[in-house]
Length: 327
Ligand SMILES: O=C(O)CCC(=O)C(=O)O
Ligand SMILES: [Fe+2]
Image (tube, rainbow, N blue to C red; front, top):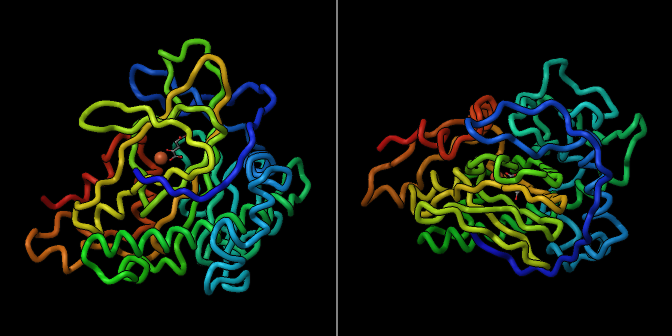
């Protein structure tokens, strides 16, 4: 897990208490206690990264996230959002009538998916809330994702060099110009018996890097040497989680971090995660340079299929990565 030091600001976001919906499938022993009311993403975008807070202000200035545009991408290239929650839906019909391939969530969180203009989605879809188009939230989130993508590309250069690879190796191998991003908002309400509950079960993220920002309330834990370690919510920082596809590409030199979210008795916690992966159809395999002294430890699988596998199974540590482990 890495931290980036970009100076972002945020403000505490308090969502009105609402009953959460029916619980998703539970891991044995603990009650899942975290979800998202269906309007969370748009509301969270409005309040955590929206115009009233520092971050929103920074979003409009090029300095924060590395520039006005994301090097090579434009709306016409095919950024999109699509909704898989009941009340945040594309305001225009999707191009295909089949459901989005990644729409089956297993986490009880609201998600918005953003990708490279593949066949399933219309470009420039907008979010609706309570039947009304929320242009502002979708515009801010779109810009946010573009800037995050630029950051991920920069970090990937440093990682590639640390592996003895050419700086742009990861960007090219994963086709990061068209990287598939998923915008995830997690909402963890106060829980009367946190010791009996679990916010988000242990898992690793499927992509390359996940950039997380939070509302100042701790709850994230990472597994380190077999123990759970609390990760504090540092102000003015993103938390960067290493994902399974970095582990694959690096032939195990970088490990994806297993993490979970716990809940607390007093405060609502919200986290916004942007999961950044390769493009949909990319098959990532260990870099040839890294299999000279160690045979490839993982087989390759299309990223889209990998995500489908994770989303159609309960979150359970590194269970999906283990399926394509060859050693
Ligand atoms: O809420 C958190 O801190 C963890 C979120 C997370 O792991 C995820 O969305 O994948
Ligand atoms: Fe995660």
